[in-house]
Image (tube, rainbow over all chains, first blue to last red; front, side, top):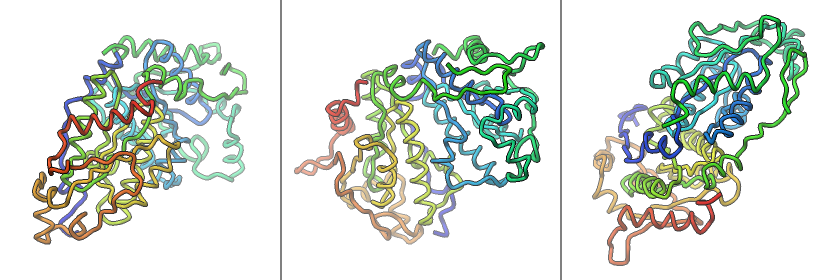
Length: 208
Length: 208
C-alpha cells in the first residue's frame, strides 16, 4: 500500500458521448444554480418553484437539498466546522457531475462561508456557477422559523447556528440577489423563479 | 399552492416536480447499471459503448467511473479497506441521485466485495439496480493489463490488488453476465452494450 497514494494509478477514462451530446439531447446547458441564505430565507421554496418553472419549459433540473443529502451521501458528517466544509465540498462535487450530465442542478444550502461557496464555484467552468443570494433579513427568517431552529438556537439548545451565534457571510459578487421590495413585501415563489429563469435564458442555458 | 409572502408563515409543500415528471420529460426510467469486474475486464469499454448506444436511441445516461470520481468527490479516500467501502458507498449514493433525476446511471467500478455492492443495491427501489458482471478470466485481464497494474502487483509494488492478493467476490444473482463465447472469443463493445440495452428495453426502462 505504501506506493499507493490517493491519486496514484488512476487513469482518466474518456468517452465519445460527452457533455455536448447530452446538452444537445436536452436542448439546454448544464450548470449549477447555488442558492445560499439563512435558514428560513426561502431557499427550498425557490428551488421547488424554479424546478416547476423549468419543467414547464421542458427543461431538466434536479434539486440537491442540503438537508436531504445529510440522509444519504453526507450522513457520516456532523455540524462541526470541518464537517460543514466537507458537506459543502461533496455537494459541490455532485452538483458538478449533474452539470456535466447536462442538467440544471439547483443546490439549496445555507452555505454560510464565502470560502466554501467559492470552492464549489471554482470546481466549475467559468459562468456555470450561478450564485443566488436569498437576501432576507434575519428578523424575517427568525419570525418565520419554519423548522423551529431559531427558537432552539436562542434558547442555547443549538450551538453554532448561522445568524445567531455563527456568522453568515453574504456573497460579494453573486449572479442573482433575491430580496424584499422597498415596501417590505417578499417576492412570490413564481416571481423569484422568474428572476432566475430570466437570467438562465439571457445567458443561453435554456438552449444547447 | 406554496406561498411565501411577507407573512410570518411558510406554507410547506413537497416539490411538485418529482421523478415521474422527469422520467416523462426524458421518456425513460431512471436506474443504476452497476458494472463490476476485475481491472482490465472491460468495464469502462462497456460503459462507453452503452452510453453511445443509449444516446443513439435518444436516451440520457451518465457514467460514474470509479477512477474519475477519485479525482473529485472521493479524492480524500485511499485504498485501505474502509476507504474502499466508503468510495463505493458514496458512488452508490450519487448513482441513486442520478436515478432519481431520471437518468440511466452507469457506474463502473471493480467493487470486489459482495457486501459493498449489496449496500448500493439496497439503496434503490427493487429492480432499479442492475448488476452487470464482467466475467472475464484473470489470465485474460492480466494479459491485457491496460494500465500496467497487474505487472506492478506481481512485482509486489502494489499491495492488495484485486485478483492478485485481494479477492474478487463474483456476484451470485446478477442481472446480466458478460462473458467470452465458448470459443474463447470476447464479445465486441457493441455486442456487450446490446446485451444491456436488450435487458433495459425488456424491463421497460427505455420508456416512461
